[in-house]
Length: 393
Image (cartoon, rainbow, N blue to C red; front, side, top):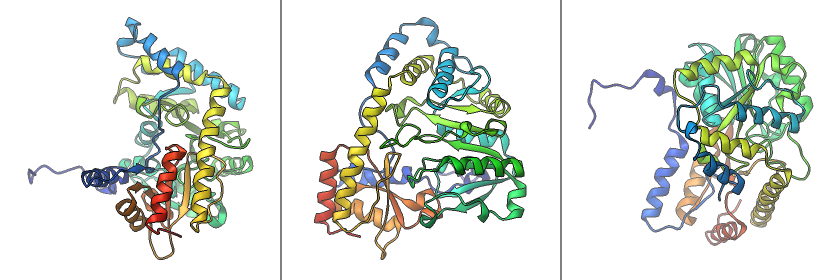
């Protein structure tokens, strides 16, 4: 029952319906109709977290002090593990006391960063398409968002020359993400160097989302923003344990980089939450210390699924090229359709769930994102259903 005088804050009107919530509604209706859904929509890894991580959590549950409020800045052990991980992966030195902050998942940090730094009317550049948290946080903060459209012709890379001079001069923050969700695009080191140079020239804060740091294939190694000289002076980088370590539901991630920027986010968070359950931080510490052999197993699993699904789709007329990273495929919809209609048609006819590309911004129209979150037997069933429904490119 709606009461006429209880009105939502105006800031909520800036937010379009969250596509994954809408997808959940449609999936629930499909299940009620008896459809056996194959859900390749959300980036929700299948299976358990690694056994050592689970065992570390079990052991930590028996530590009495872990059941109290955690430190606002995270446990020292977890912050040290973050710093060691960056040193090992990228040869980047971090001060664990001031340049690393644990988060309740990277989505939380990405959104709250905007609340900590964006005033109503500030200009924030967000690529389109982009992970929704990159533009929803600034939208809630009242930013004027400049949507920088990406294109297949430019391999979904940001083209800084396309940013008008007047926009560049008044921009406060640039959000970006490589390896990219949803397009799977990767960026060379030279691109990061160009972005840092541009940001310094225009005095723009850089916010890089490195969610897919370790989901890379065939020897490709993603670049960390912090590997670039001078980047730490103007930017921060976000990371999550959701993808690589199957810890999506644990809600744990972190931000690293410029200590002043991090302190601003920490100040906001001390007024909003009490941080991550210390038991989960102990488990996350263990995850970051796992041997490379575990990472290689994860990479091989997703590469196998990638190759299997690409082969099947290409047999049906698509021309999907192998991605070098992430846990997705970014595929064009048939020319006589659009992203939403294609995704709904696929769901209704086959029970296969994919995410329409326009959920990531107008720049994603004409594509759908397919998550590699099922084993090959299940992916084979999905392909057979597509074939039977005669859904082709």
